[in-house]
Image 1 (cartoon, rainbow, N blue to C red):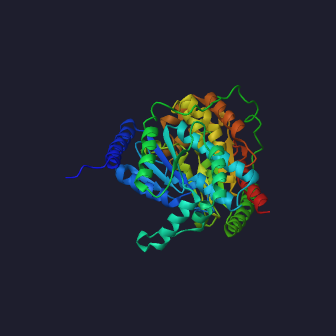
Image 2 (cartoon, rainbow, N blue to C red):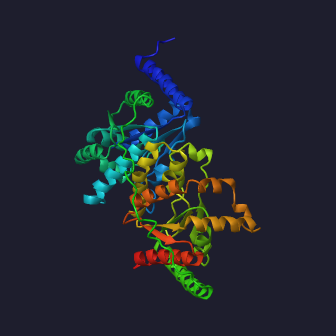
Length: 474
């Protein structure tokens, strides 16, 4: 029997290294993202296919959005859909930087918009790394002459099944290599550089080189994490919630008249938004028994059921706990023209998880910036993002608790947790004030509503949503 070549022995050894690295991910309950970018899309696809052979495919997922995928969704939306759970691995082909390079080469993205995109890519990579995900980035770079030859051969060979796209030819141009190199340095998270592997006609050597880089990088996940600077809130903002002073009670007749007009107006605005493809996100937060559920029922009372969805936010499931806390909310981003209403939301990271100690200090302290970036990514698509804090006094909360206990229709809402949480009123108040102060932005503002009178709160909530939609549609 002939002796195997040195190349085949090296590839076999690499296969074992990658399997061992994958087993460590499973054992240590860590996740990894392998990003394959570059100007050679054919090579990226070939490498991804080879990696699925080397790895145990049971815990591997491929994420491969095209250059023009999901034009109505936020740019990073497809990548969030396939973020790996702990112990799993995602291979990304059609990566965020290559797609950005294609848009820049087409002159679809430039100036401030390009700078904002690159900043969002840096933030995204650092966010994953800070959460314990190993981010390995391979950039396959092939010279224009070699790449054009490979593309012609692939196009001429029916058995390959490869269709040469305009993007392939665009990235093959020598002038765009300089653009790609500039974007690589500007769009990389801290301590998360691209590892360049030179392409060519020899597929096995190229895949071996890339595989060795991947094996080495995956092996470093437990020893080196990017250093993310974190600043905890310093001092308590004053007067934010106190400014939501009590309002005169709204009488039943006045309430009914205003509610009918507002619901009709919101119905018209939502239909117009649906026609124009304008998406809306409305978040309702507040203390227990603040009246969020009642406000949501009135908010959706006259809407077309096909155009909205309400998302309650209970404790995360095991599947959700295995991923970044924002993953379950990226999965609920509304389709064009739709309204998503969140009964509690991603702010749980800086509220209940902070107060109860479910999140470490560093985790909830950096979450303000992560949340602001998440909302900015929604808003940059034109989406309306509005956040309502329904504020009630401690005395009013107690009255509502007692009323619920004697009501057969509301008794089911009361648990021991409600009274236990009430003992942490001051801690929750401070967390809420920190949250509002640090996440109130022009693109995703907070509206604080006085909630001691339920009728007033419901009317104020509908007015705020109507105003936000009307302003955008105008």
